[in-house]
Image (spheres, rainbow, N blue to C red):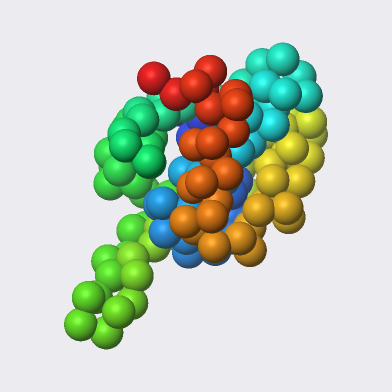
Length: 132
């Protein structure tokens, strides 16, 4: 994953700090949905792979493992600490329109419970247009 896709992922993590990939992927999906709604095109070319009641972003884990700017932190089930991914490099550069859209999504959905955010994404009428 390179270019704008990588930078969109990096920007969300840069803004939020260490974030679980589940939440990150839902925020990115909402950004693509909102971009499709407002601009008639997606923000990213990320591939959302749907499953029953959920989805994942193809290649996200590989990017975290191979790009030195991303630092995954493992969770610990014994202490109930969740894993997360942190972005450790300079702020990514996106065009101002894309940055504004991501900021809007983070501000609007960033504090929503992950499962509710998942429901909002997968039940959105435009989700089928970004998934698959």
